[in-house]
Image 1 (tube, rainbow, N blue to C red):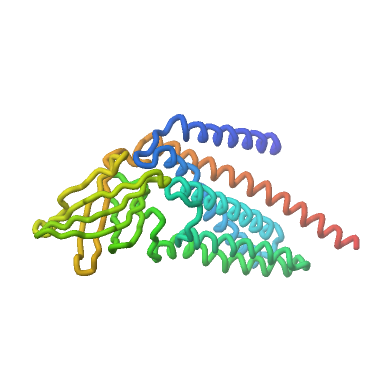
Image 2: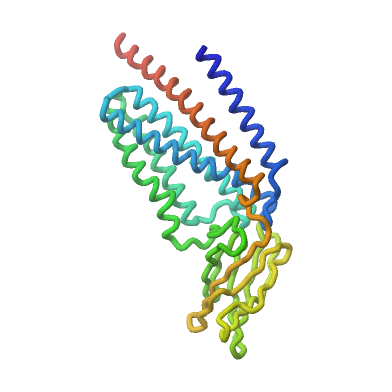
Length: 321
């Protein structure tokens, strides 16, 4: 009976994920500004969420092992950590693909990329530790302690550190709808990213109370570059001209200016529909999260059983020796 239920669950998960894959391209519309590249969020965000889930479950069973000293808890902690590491790699890989499409490079050592890379190294070291210790009890104990310490670093590396750093080549307001992006402050000669547009502030020119910025805008994939001239009215303390980014519906505006420091806060408006503002996209996104969660649970349970069988075989060999 249990085998039939497991086979049915595997079939349903496969059909569900196939449906999500088809819907990603056949149901949801292309995002204004990113085009088809915006669809990668249907894969990228759920894999990152599952990575957090996997490491959390691993820490839970590691704590249970230290409390109850049951080998099955260690098996589940190991299986969850393996799943978390796998989905962290998938989240990193999909992020690298988006990076290549949007900015023309797979890896640019952005703070978010660096912290996720450090997290992968931390959990890879967990499996190196396990393979270096022959005594099963000692291996389980040290691995459980290490897993708990590794879990403490996960929220900091995933959520805190990237937001503390001044990210220059990572979208600080991707998939915005309307004007709810905070914008980006650039000094003359500096480069930053606003949404999926790479900006370089070339100069600030002043005539009376009117300030005009010369901004080099690079389109996704670095397919084209254009110099836009947004302006700011010092008397009204508000933007004046907001040029449209060529090939897009985005407009570029100056929200604040500091002539003495040679810097301006630039922002964009996206009058089109935001990626998750579209109902079809939102439902497919939620379905992807549910599907990946079910896939992880199935992988976790199966892998925990396999590890348990391997442990049983190892114990039997020791008993016969």
